Image (cartoon, rainbow over all chains, first blue to last red; front, side, top):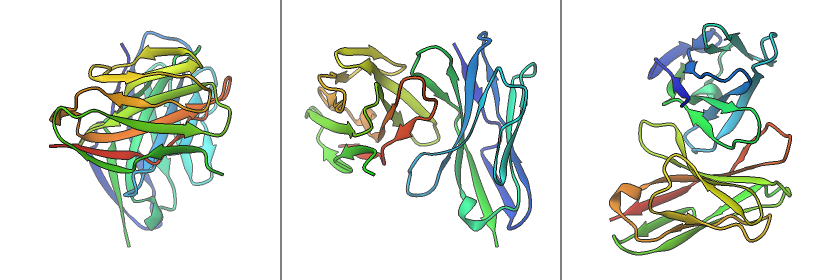
Amino acid sequence: AQTVTQSQPEMSVQEAETVTLSCTYDTSENNYYLFWYKQPPSRQMILVIRQEAYKQQNATENRFSVNFQKAAKSFSLKISDSQLGDTAMYFCAFQTQGGSEKLVFGKGTKLTVNP
Amino acid sequence: NAGVTQTPKFQVLKTGQSMTLQCAQDMNHEYMSWYRQDPGMGLRLIHYSVGAGITDQGEVPNGYNVSRSTTEDFPLRLLSAAPSQTSVYFCASRGYRVLTIYFGEGSWLTVV
């Protein structure tokens, strides 16, 4: 069974600075997808970024980028130029390729951006 | 721009009562699923469906029932509510060969 571990329950960062959230996962699969979701206080689940395991290039979406280390089973999220609106819970999630709808989530990291 | 719509948004139930959480999507997505989120936890899969007439169990299916009679709707039924089912419930959908999963806004359920 796949597991996802987020070792940082809470983090804080000053506005405009950079912060990195950690995620490790365990799987015997070779083809899979990894995601970072943001959950603000409204509880809406918002997709931040995704990575296909077969792609060596790290995904980037504006101020958000990942460091995907497949051999180490590590998938960290870097937020550059942090903004107050980035304050939220961040969840790392794993999905096997090939029809399974099961997203396996980590327990989340609560990120606070301070002014 | 409705996307995934969940109703009700808030509900209080007494132990032993039954109820149905409704989920509808207007994107013609084949895949739909239900998750629950408990304090300090990520989302956990309850049931999912890969198309009309096809459903399967997820990680935490006990106490819940689903059916998928149409592509658009995927209701979640609580058969006999228990306090352990107090949670926030999310419905999600995605299209075939599309990676992006769309979530509803969540349904807050309290069982007393």
